[in-house]
Amino acid sequence: MRKILLSVLAALAVLVGMSAPALAANAEETTVVQGGMTDAPVAAQAEVAPEALPSCAHITYPGNAGYIAVQTSPNKVVAWGIQMQPPSRSAGRWDVDTYLNNHKTTSGFHRTVGVYVPHGSIQARSGQVFRVDATLVSVDGNTYHSVPNNCRVP
Image (cartoon, rainbow, N blue to C red; front, side, top):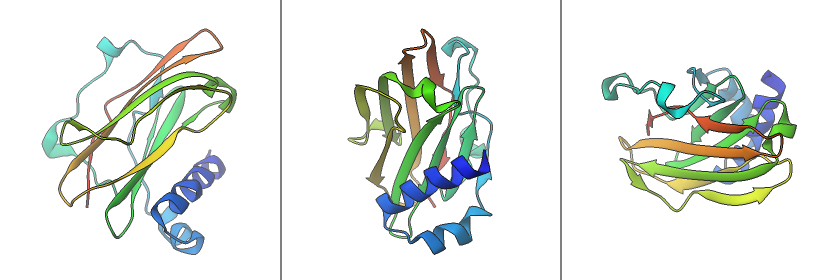
């Protein structure tokens, strides 16, 4: 899992302009919060209390079907990616929206793909709350949803 996480973070590093050595130096500092992608119904998901928000600096939200990785560059570009486990589950129709302070951003992803790691980035300001809302209707016949994954931009 760590190898896959580092490869996703490396791809995100390219998006936010961080070098691979800088990313590797920060990889040990990645926060892990349960969440990610799950096959649980949306109604069964718990909300995250605003005062309990972790930093978006380097965070991974693992779920029972995959994980969401988020990191923020020094110039406040928030990059995100979603890795399904196994990766073959990622083939299908993705509907991903991202939000800053509950306002939809342009960093979403809405398309049908083969095996792929949906990803994007958005400029943010310190203190803003970022989240990814994702639904995947996979070619394996299952529907997967993201669980609450709010974090605060450092």
